[in-house]
Length: 164
Image (cartoon, rainbow, N blue to C red; front, side, top):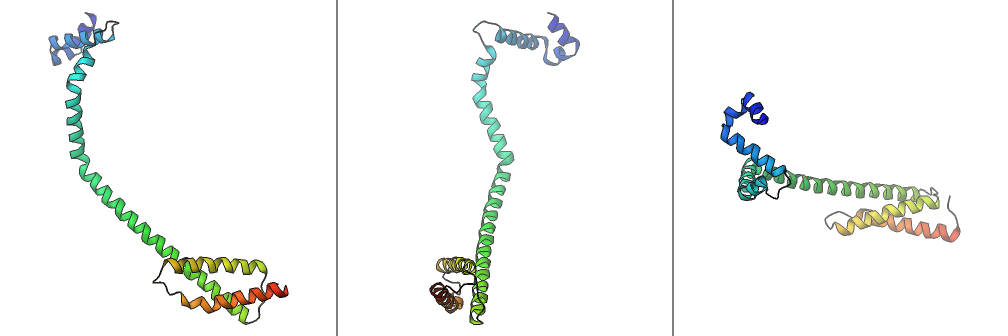
């Protein structure tokens, strides 16, 4: 009875009413006791599912618009990333083509190169050709003759062992 007096002294008994306060305390004590009677569990089994459904409905109503807005933003971000990836890949192909053309110009001027430099330019050639194969609209004939020249000079350097 001391618990009831304490709760009444702080005003909780008046707020809930003495009967409801006694029921709450009794349910809690029975729930904690070693008896197999669990009134709170029984009560939650009865009212829990409707409460969960109601809470879910309220949550969906409150955040439904936010979720759909986030989905739209995510789709827009994915599209933006795809465009950025395409721009980056095209820029890399253009850079490779510039290096190929510059290397071919150096070969035409009889500038000697090391075998490692040839291997590096062949990597650029492979990347450039790979991009051209997967992107039909990309102008890819600009380096064709330069690539052929580089391959011919490389074959001659291998045959004559005349790398830098």
